[in-house]
Length: 397
Figure 1 (tube, rainbow, N blue to C red):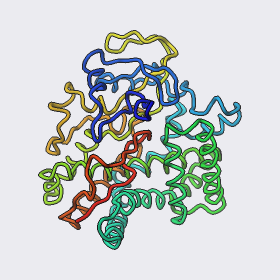
Figure 2: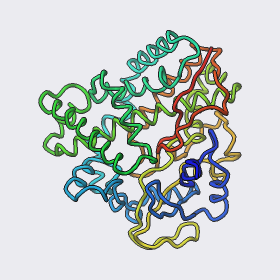
Figure 3: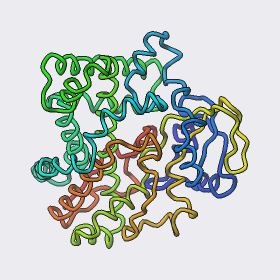
Figure 4: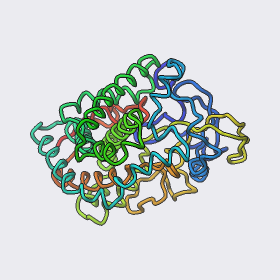
């Protein structure tokens, strides 16, 4: 059996598009039985309205009751340590307690203060891409370093540690990795984060970790600080980098729309929203566990069942937008679930949007002749990653 056949239904793609079987599941019953990437049975919810319903109702669809990946390998003490501070694994009121300490740092107004520095980082990455000479890997020289450096500076992560962290992030998100190796990577990552937190506690800087220590040091345990830092660093680095790579590829495949993003600032913001909807790079969030018997799209789901929401299926639901499989940057796609929905809506969404609004037009203006250096059919996609993307994207100009 090939690796492609071992992928769960909701992680199978054909290049930039979800496979047709996922669309059929959405357009017929809307709910199908699947296995999670870790082999557990689950119900896959595919329709836009139903996905929003699940994500908006933590009382019936719990994050806290869902088994932590690797829980069968860890004892209860280590498991509690690993879960501490991970907002994705909690329901209100505990989730609310953790999130309210972070929310002020991710408001649109706060993020706007970062715009000059993000612009500098983007321009430096473009200089590096140009120095690399054509053909060059857009992922290595642009899509990866821009958000990586932004989130590292925000959290106070040493610049020299970025390559090591990226390699570890790829392993953390690789669902094909054996569970023992996943747990070993989780332990390795937590040990690194513990060092960062210890330095922040000893000498709090002006970065976000320093802020958390100064302002909430009495409210957050060391384990919670480690968990928060790990989640923010992983999420802020992997998601935006893959959006920059895949988004560039999508625009190169739609040259008329690429020109609009390059030449007209009014098109940039709606283009970012449409690319978020159309690409839906987060393939799977941690499942929810039903706390009671529920009904979704006419399907009865027993209490204690795992429920997975398919963002790619939901964002291409014809009940949500007309002609959903067509990329159309003029529509903006308000209401997509690429950042989730409800209490777990992505905390860093304003930062990700700003990075993309700056990066896409800057790239296209610097290299107006940007083109793929390899045939589309030969591109190497990250099929087994929780966050979909490209391993490499060689471009010329």
